[in-house]
Image (tube, rainbow, N blue to C red; front, side, top):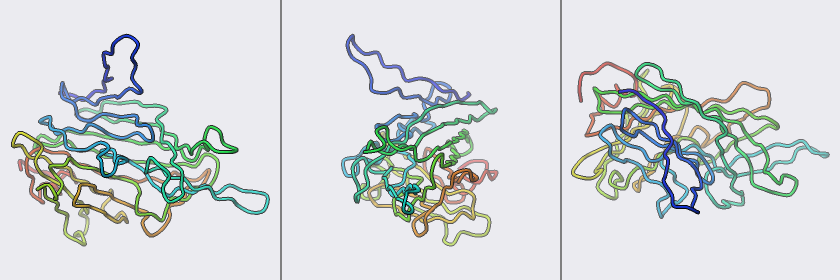
Amino acid sequence: MGFRLQSEDIDLPAGAWSAGTRTMLMWGDKPVFGLSPGAFRNYLYPVFTPAGFAVTSESPADHPHHHSIWVGADHVNVHVPALHGTEVYSYNFYVNDVFQGRAPGRIVQTQCQAQEQGDAIRITQHLVWRGPREWGAPDGRHVLDEQRLISVRHLPAFNAFQWHITSSLTAPNWAVSIGPTRHAWFNARIGPGMATIHGGSHRCAPHPAPMGQLAWHVCTGSVGGGHTGGVAMAMWPANTTHDWYVSPWGVMTANPCLHQALSVEPGAKPVSLSARFLVFDGPLTDEYIQAALQDSPASSP
């Protein structure tokens, strides 16, 4: 079986219309995940294991801005030269409301392509980070450009899909700083059956991780019908500086700017951040999670 993108067409009655179109990544006739155009940011939902079980949550009641697998930051500052120095405009690209005085911006997809690569597929999304409508910027300020590369493979030896996501940022107009903040970058809101408060389990790699091995976190638990599934996440490469937040109610965050801001300068080399995800059926040992994330050989779980 191979990978392909497929529009999720919905047959609506006359006079009705959809607010957006979701594009599904398919593996043969089975869905892998959806590229969903949310009101405030693009994200991956729904997300399925190879056996077809959903493993993430979209807009849960406790945190409605948690959108399955997503990229975002709640403290994004635009440094604009002014007559008497520099003015700083601060926005929020994480919460769907004003948060700590920062109005919400939008991360909007402008282009998407896919390229099959043997038993894998590479999806390239072009996205614009645009600030809210305001005086002097009725369409919102063009804050950042992002190229998001998502490479997906099926790993039959592990009953898993492996994703590699790289988020590359450039500043089209003004210098931008991101953080310091505790709400930033790669995020996963897992399905309720995998949260520890509902009987799921959470494990992580040894800390500090052995030389050359990834630091990772994994949540596993019930996905329905007596089946078990899991989601693992690791920053890439192994020596990446980051901080983790994993909650008992089901969110995992890998954050590179908790203590120090990221700087994106106009005309400079893009700022690139990468993470690997593993979405799998059944329980996997720590050894096999490490092997599947790092492309190490293994025969079976």
